[in-house]
Image (tube, rainbow, N blue to C red; front, side):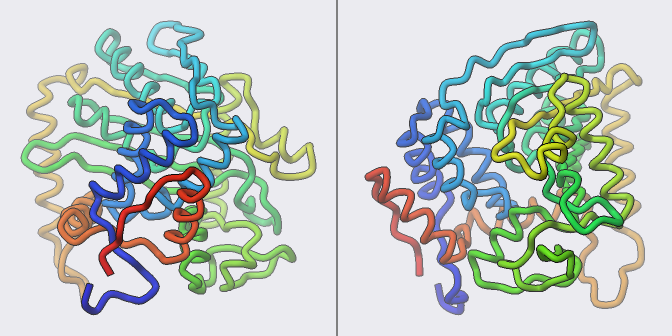
Length: 354
């Protein structure tokens, strides 16, 4: 495309989705599951969350070949007590496991007005806002968290001590789309570092530290990420590990640290929480108040240089509309890795728009 940076190519979302689904199928995933998994990845890319989109696919294919990710998992509810369920994911693709967990949580919430589904032995889930939105689309509030091995420095240390645990909250509105916040407890998600490496870009100071514990702007030298807001980020990660891992007897962080560091491909845990708004009264009135809140915030005086005030989720919605129209930008480094993966599976890649 005219004026497009040389470091990127663009591909229309439908063509990219067909390609990614073919790669996952080529690695042994059943077509329906490959399609569902692909939808979550393309959703992330469309919204500008490239760190959790298709750049992850080569790694997923590698883990599928090694059977670290189970292409044919036996996902089952192992325990149900009141509003709480424990889902054994059997090393399923994380996006599949967390979609099932939220479906279970919504079902529980329809019975008891709140549903908490803890998923054990999942794999990398991608952009967890995708699953929180399942609840909002069902008229409920949704919360999703996942726990993994040490990737981020605990505040005051110079090595990885906690995970970058993602946290997403979705809330339905009336006239507006659902509100959505999807964040990492680190300054940036690991995927953004991978994206910077693929694009050959430096990263800002404060993203991560090198093997000696020194701040660095060289993406290739970042050994561990830094927590957002210092002790707040690392403390939040610590507590998510308690909620997501200790409760299901599948501790990740302590096991890794006692083993001398990050365990290679530990199996993750996740939480999907759905909250039935009818328990609080008229859901239409609650959604109307959500609209009112949004109207009040966007009416605030803008800071210098700000053209638009975005509510939670609106920036991603706007980016999605643009990328549906213009195609999804992919760093050439990411595209090269995807092409190598496709070649190894005997799959033909789509032609990008230059």
